[in-house]
Length: 366
Ligand code: SAH
Ligand code: SF4
Image (cartoon, rainbow, N blue to C red):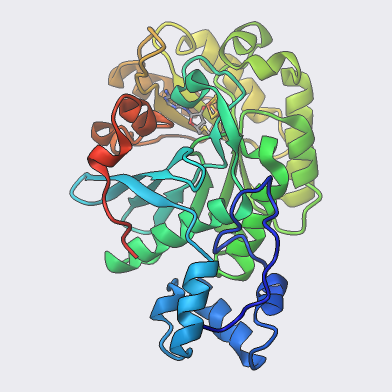
């Protein structure tokens, strides 16, 4: 057995997993090896999306040692596919027993993975299954990166290439800024994904938006607005009391000025709550008040166990979209993909809450 230099585990005693280690840390671990090994292993992990045991150019003992000392972070609890295999959703268990989920969606022109940044969420939006379940913990950089690697591998098996990442799974990425940003840098530098294909979605954490504006990589920003007046937004999205719309819009304008990227507003249409003509009017004004008009993504609210109100009807969704368009605002209706497999935010975990994880355990596809 080859001895690798070991490092104490960093994050509160949790295991340092395969995609947590930086290149410099890998180099330290491979200190006794020829220097080209670092490139070989790094390319194996990030270009080939391979496990160390698959890297046949490495000596067998080294493969075994790396396999053991750099364990995967995510083990499959459940994997479901829908829409004829176009949507794949995973529920994973992390090394400390926490559960998170990831969704891969194939479209005609791209394959997008929707990743989680936290296990649970502390923001408490009442309509969101993740918000209803509360906060467990932040994910590490490696746990975020591995979601993309595993989805990328699956996309390849499906004959596709993973091209886009959206932070629209569980959690609020801006509340876990450092790990989120380190993951984004890894997607760009090591997985070769273009910044234009990376989207951070936030409920409106203003300091996070301001910080994002100072980063070198111009990623897309999606702001989950859902209401264009403070009274309703305070109710739907409680963090609005801390960062009200004026402050939020100011930060959005700052982001656009710094990056010149398109910004989108996400709007979950809730029957009788935020789908009236007046709501459309206010939203239009907000979208047009920015230096570059915001693009609006409409999605009918997905039903969740803890929220009694329904999503708007298909007809109302279309009318609302047309109102925005007639006011000169770009608006698209997001297809609700994978609702039959509970592919909406936080819902797979919610439906598994009573199930014994082992009862549905599948082997990880590696
Ligand atoms: N916390 C971040 C990112 C994760 S939520 C955010 O809030 O932006 C990803 C998206 O799913 C957000 O736009 C959120 O508002 C939306 N969402 C949450 N619950 C939903 C539901 N029940 N139906 C439709 N969209 C929902
Ligand atoms: Fe958290 Fe986003 Fe859900 Fe709100 S909508 S509870 S911020 S994950």
